[in-house]
Length: 440
Image 1 (cartoon, rainbow, N blue to C red):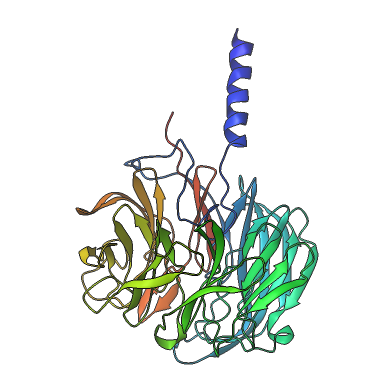
Image 2: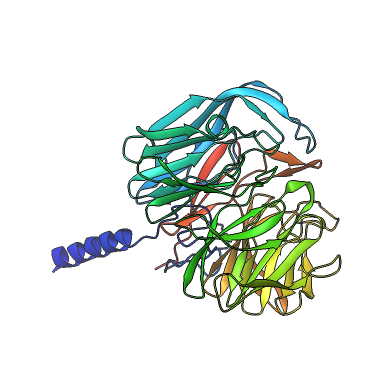
């Protein structure tokens, strides 16, 4: 009987591990900022969360990706140069961009791929794009436009491209930052250059399938796939307009003028029902109503200085009748109504944590069931309820010390991964794995 019970427990543990969720790309499996794994804590223990492991890493804004028992993290090992974090000027660094593959269970390094890479960008502390993992391949896009497809088991190069050279374009001042997207057989990237703001590649070979759109700057907004009016639409937001393309051909379905300040189209548009919300720095935000056909879209409302909010560093999330997100000018987390953009509440507690205005105050929101896990720029993991009634914090745990800098304050600006009943988070010195499994 004891042997039977022991075998049953081992089988149960194996099944639990087999059904552990992955986080294969930026914002999770569906790119919707939702964590669907079961058996997760609803309140942090009074003595804190269990830190399973910490391992050293180098510079990077790129978040980790987790698939099966592997964590993929992208960083920059600097050998020379000084980072000044001047928003209007570029810094020159020398070093290597590195893709590290680690054991999710132990943090042990399984393989490493690296290449020499000179930086000449503003805020140069490492790559921006989270690795995208699909079908035994991991895709990485470096801050200077080096695109790689690697074998997830070995780290061997399957194919690679130097986007600046191939498409005769320049590195944007804040680097290549639009997380690549895989859908079906295609890999979508924001590139730049004449007629090639958006490019679709064959994910297996790297062969170009189509290119589309021209603008003097490509922007930083990741490609986003939506489905509406019976068709799939690829959203590409460059610094002049938000565009919906046929994902198979690159043909334009519709285009809406939406021009944020400083060329900073950054956060992904969010869809709910027949509406899209997109916002950027400079009080540029709009709710776009999608029509009955794939080619129909019009602005329902545009925000102003006292309505909506204007995100930059983290993508908002829509929940019910409210949009939740960070306002880059005030540094507040804000809840605003979808219907008209009216602000319902605002707080700095989960962003900068202070009482004073903090430009670009940042928090990364991930919904889990009826609550939110929030990764603050202060290095804290917060468990909170967000509702029309306001922000209600229930738990907080300090994961990492802020190692980067913005406008004189220390920050962590990297989106964590939620997988295997854990959170995987990094700063510029270490990657940490923290247990979030509910107690049995």
